[in-house]
Amino acid sequence: MTLDDESAAAPPIVDRGSWLRAREALLDREKAHTREGDAIAAARRRLPMTEVPDVALIGEHGETRLHALFEGRPQLIVYKHMWHDGEPIEGQCEGCTATIWDVHDASYLNARGISFAVLSKGPWSELAPFRAFMGYTHPWYSNRGVDDPLLGPATEGAFVALLRRGDRIFATYWITGRGVEAMMSSMGLADMAVYGRGEEWEDSPAGWPQSPTFTAWSTDGRPTPQWSRPGATPVVASEHRH
Image (cartoon, rainbow, N blue to C red; front, side):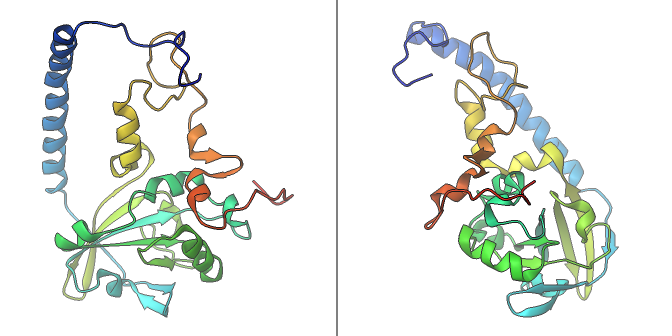
């Protein structure tokens, strides 16, 4: 489909008044959806919590305890980035790249007393150049060797919310799978556009452009956002690629 392809499938054309009435009818459903989301968030705030150890991580300044990642704030959210040992930058997880790409600046989180960091099982020697190439400003740490089920590699692809009470640390919530979409503003914006994400699982009218799920997360053999990075080069074929 091209931008000037007037034969491509599209919504029916109506007058402005009819369009506004249809929009307002959907708005009632959207408001109900928002209120249900608020109710779920209220229930989330009432969940119990469980203590986690002050594990040792490896970061930019060497060994760092989990406690330090709070940076003096009472709360911390970490994202567990998957890692493929020994793979080139373009061979790393396109799903994790898509998940945290919109979280370049944690200023608003910080203003609410929440710090943000990324944990990954990859060795720091591989994580550091990846972080630098991607231009991430949030801190990264290697949790290689950590065996706690929430803080170790077992929960890759997940967000974990933590609370500090003095020297003790507690996990209050964690989410993975489609639950992480709430943090992906690009997905929300695509859902607002008429063709949605253009993925084959979506319930779209006949003729709508659709492609295999997650297709847009990778472009020409590498995670899509990498092409915006200075120095991005064509993918080099490797027998070690997944």
